Image (cartoon, helix red, strand yellow):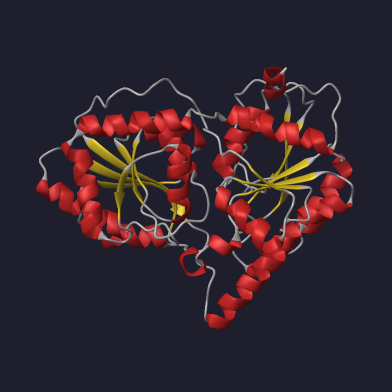
Length: 398
């Protein structure tokens, strides 16, 4: 159960690579995606990956109140061996009540005696509600936090809850007394050949994601303008992605505000088949975050393509860097002067940029997402033994 491209829902890119990894697991008979609905004029992407059959069932929609009923009805009709939910707290909506109701689905599935596994990318205790666009006045913020704790307890009623950051395991065990939480690897999306030094003299900075809440680009654009005016090396800033659901119109406003600054390019939404070229054309990937809401898929993508990272040393992002071996040039969040220094370091020293990229490549390649899929199959096997299942990891153990 997940968002899935060409939908622009949160976690859709992770799902794209996750599904392609599962397609190579021939111990499975079929993979069924319970995905978010597309607009009437949008067609499914063609599946160019060989492997087990994948059936896409577009059966729920963002901010719909009846999402749990619709999902449960489809799941009962399919009677699968297990259901894996790819979730964060804003997966089902940016309106509190429909989003919260839909997050009850894993618990409802378990009540039907169908094993349910939740991959939870963030937890309420570490989310800055103001930065994420979900807070209001003090009463609303308090109510949102209380509702988040209630929903967390309901999510923990699934058979298994996987999180990608060790601190999340500690919080769920200590605050909620959870006994069914496991640390799951995030995994590298792809493993291209080792990166070569950039062949172009143009220094291209890339910011990628959904912008407007805790990912904001004003500081980045202002820092880029200063660096550009102080160095002769040709450079470009590429802002690739779309608005966060909680910040509609943000990028259009920013683009209008900074239209006088040259060599700043807004691409809009990037189709999945264009993501590789986008990252490979970049010199460094910049993370203009004011807070964090979980492990960073963009950091793993930057590593997969061997790109240097320019990032704030804060929250979950700092945890991932420390625990998984990534590196980068660090700056103080929302500090133009600090970010100018970080960008200038990359501009002045292309060799250093390449060295940082190689270290990130090594970190990203440490655990490919194909092995992560094996990890989930092993745990699903403990919940409901499947006939003749023997994953790649089991074969290694034998």
